[in-house]
Length: 269
Image 1 (cartoon, rainbow, N blue to C red):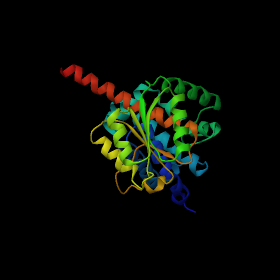
Image 2: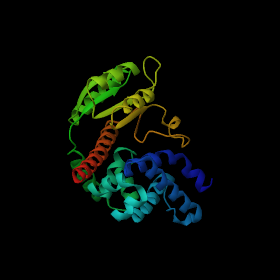
Image 3: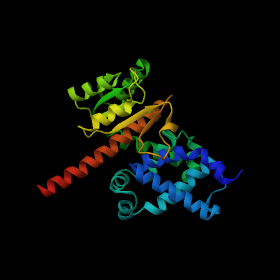
Image 4: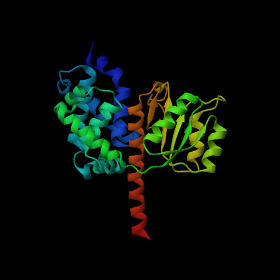
């Protein structure tokens, strides 16, 4: 089996990881594309490790080298990524996402980042403390399965957030968003009345600027590269620590973006 065949099954998850790391679909996909170009040009850059671990190590080695300079970050991967990476130590975010979202063991994350397992533990503690400083917000859940909605409500409360409403249909979601503006939306793709969570979110975003996390049992149907795709996804069945990590990341990016926008507005007023 060729190297390409070995790594191909892991590319959708690497794209998700890259998007979380950079804060945007375009920046994350660009970074992954450049990695693949480098591997095609010289396969020897790929480390002698199991394919999934080697792919992430190769990606992060390329990523940290290319984007370690803040000015280069803004030029190469966009200002959202530059802001986020400057606000939280890059290696701490990498460790946090590798373990919490990508479900690597801590020993595997140590291999990927080429550090000791003790260092991984220190990075995870550092990242958790930093991300834990997020400002609490109001959350709208668009989910038609009661048990899943209850689990999400509990997780959000644990993070210090407030669930303002749980909507089961497209119509209910629009009504809830109108009655109380959310600071975050968690949306299932398929809803109780056969309507689409994607459509509900698009309608909400037509009037509100709010970060969104999509929930789906079929992420492969969305991560095709053939059309605009959600940047942030939670896959069913989900792990609690992964959900908390993604929610914190989304709010982290949104908070940094708002601070930057408010700063520009103050300068021009």
